[in-house]
Length: 286
Image (cartoon, rainbow, N blue to C red; front, side):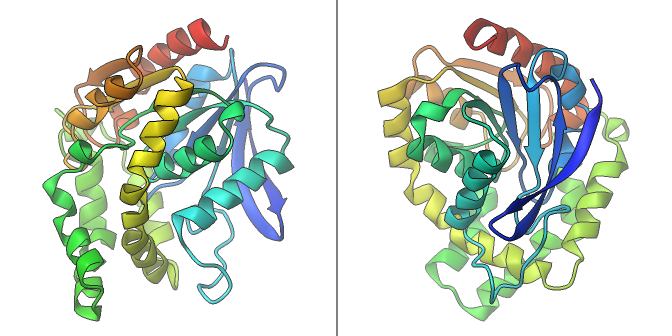
């Protein structure tokens, strides 16, 4: 199925998205993470598009979605989730399965908490919802939460440099030469846009609101028991395997799987993850 590249007007914000598959088929909404955009799904979308309607937006502040100034748009996860929620209404997505990765997890979780009737299933790929999934790599970010000084903010600029992007893509991968440079180079291009560094630092500070929401998200999972597939790169230095295993505490039927990869597991295991998703979604919403 061909992929189309579109822009939706979401209350005046021009939001870029990729779409593939028959709109009459069940929808899967793909939500990317930091520092990427919908191009991270370039290998996954063809794995799904024959059987599902696939939609992958670029979040505000990322990719090809319009980047309003910080004086016009407050870059918080709550505001981003509100934009994505409105996006689903604008493009006519009444119900959908969520695929959440990294930053996509707190965005998608907010959608699920607010509109549980819309969520048909959840696939989490290194998208954390439990404190035991947070590694020591977050220590500098937590220091900024505890003391939001300019010095602690500036200390996080190392998260925004190409060396860190490369680390995110290749750490935990058995053969780094198997990871295409295309995705990370695009990420670095978007990070280098004027003003994007301050947007990303705002979001790193606001990430503490996601941790504060973990209990609410877990209560949603316990109450609504959505079908859950947690499929993680087991060598992720940021969101570690106990965060995947913890889903079974709230959704005992959760399907928890690991692939031998790192944070950006789609870069090396798109076909395996795609096959697992087709099987899982075929049983639950197909």
